[in-house]
Length: 428
Image (cartoon, rainbow, N blue to C red; front, top):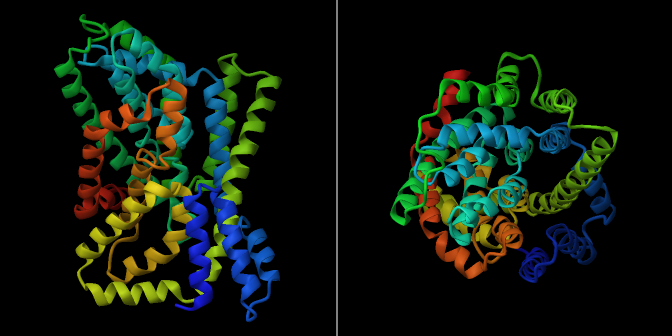
């Protein structure tokens, strides 16, 4: 590795550890590379930055962000929460179960774990505390359940991964759906065990009547059908993943008008939120594109591939190395940024080991999702603690059982490929 690229990496790492925003860190390190390297034209930096977001696949991001924003303004969240309450009311730790199930169902609408965590923290944690749940447990459940969201279509992480790695976003959606449902069920079991040990109350002791069930289902039926419509539409070729985002925006607006929850002022407010959220993602993508070009020019992916192959020729050992590496990276770098930088390096190596690209995508996405709940960066952790007022130290201690569950899930996804590819093979 040349001195110039070594200096570039050192600058990037220093800036990241100083908690400089990731796009500034990437751009600064890239700018230094171009300034001190006489063999490259500095104009390439501007060109690559502008072309970084010039990718048709990225059009899905603003559409799905807009759909999630308008769904929240259209009383959809409240309707789905009421339906979840009916389903889980008699379970031990009923309101905590609602939290997990709500994250899973809303994952098909929001696509963002941070947005989902913030929503749960605002809506459910105060009510959970009133019912005797501890602040730290309520906060951890909100954060941990939000990690299901990136796995449920239309998870933005899957759109970014598919765009970067050139993989079918539709296949990633289907794979993530199966993993997300499995994670939801296992997390509900863990919540039940903890709630039973702490004597957290049920929301109700009587059976749900058929009338109550169908009333709640009728209220939430249209939003609940959306993920099925999106996946089905992509699979049978009615629309692409990008067009599916546009369809979701249209449906969200129709639902908002049908429920009499949207007006011109709210629509404008939702569009402003969409623009801000989209701009944040796109700036990171463009910055990472510049840095990825530098890595490619310096043959870093090839060097790493040769290094990995020299260490081991066993794909399972390679996957373990990747898991440990990504878990450490996820503790310090925001997930989307880490994915944009690392996927171009790791995906080709995984392909050389004969690892299914969909399987490897799920390993990477879920791995980096775990990092959002761990210090020192832990974006989801800090968002939830900031909203609920939970001390970080108590949050970390309370999160241990959930982190154990998540790591066990990661190992299962890593070494049982059918969990990632089984549903994809069945549908396709």
